[in-house]
Image: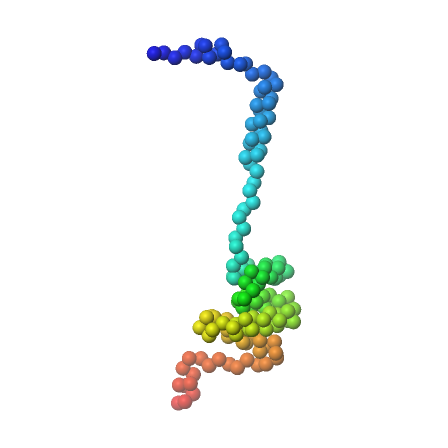
Length: 149
């Protein structure tokens, strides 16, 4: 069995100049529509975003980012503690101390083992500095043994 294309050529329509222009225009439209850029998916806000890549010359942007973190985690004292640092760097002691007072109140509601002890200590020290109190030195491990000899 043999296949010929002679009959096909006789019956195939010959594209006109107008038809070729329409086809070319359709191809261009399809190409452009296919190249439309989709927005990149946004990474969800995490607790660590407040101090991620902080640059002093971009401090207002870092504060805005941290405001979003605080709003996303309203019952977590950690982001407030970090925003304290940003407010301190910006010279806004009143805002920094408000954040630490709020963070300390939130931390007080967390059971003793449910919060990072370093965060709890940071909050205590920073709250005392806001109140103008001198923090007590934390004894190092084994200090009691050395002082009793």
